[in-house]
Image (cartoon, rainbow, N blue to C red):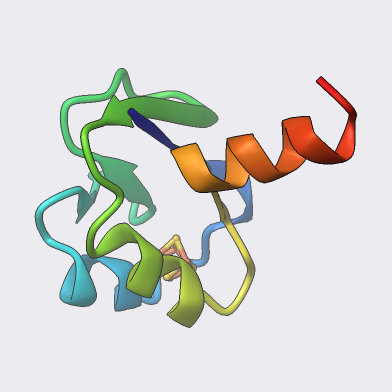
Length: 83
Ligand code: SF4
């Protein structure tokens, strides 16, 4: 499983993430990005099978609004921490 986290308070609503990854993102009524299927709040988070296009969305976001965690990242982190 992977995790997508979106810090909405930083979003400027440029629409790049929704254009590149409409599977997971849409622009909400307040003009900011929103994760489809997540509860609309300041910091949204969902677990998905695969990060897929969210990775491209994170790459183009001008404000680094996304935090992505996938299995490989988690394994590398725990290896670093000696777990
Ligand atoms: S790319 Fe970033 S700033 Fe632009 S709408 Fe998406 S989350 Fe907001």
